[in-house]
Image (cartoon, rainbow, N blue to C red):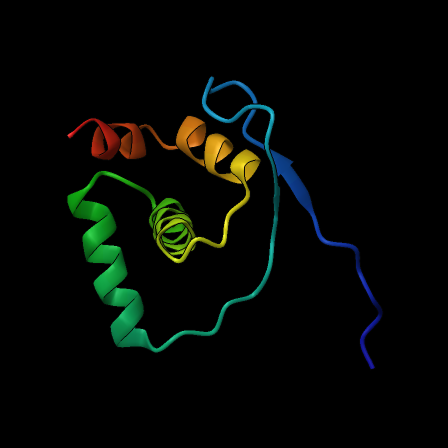
Length: 88
């Protein structure tokens, strides 16, 4: 039996984008072909794999209407790409 460890929380201080947001870590098991596809997509859009996954999750939540107003505002502040989509 493994001991319980509290999730690590990291901040993105220093880069000016989402510096007030905290992040939680977790393990994600995903099909290798899906992961490769998302990695290629992230490379095309000059994002990290983690950034691309978070971008896709935020977009899916927004499209499904499952975000609160505060969540949507912090998401658009944290991802400049979402501001571009809204202005087009």
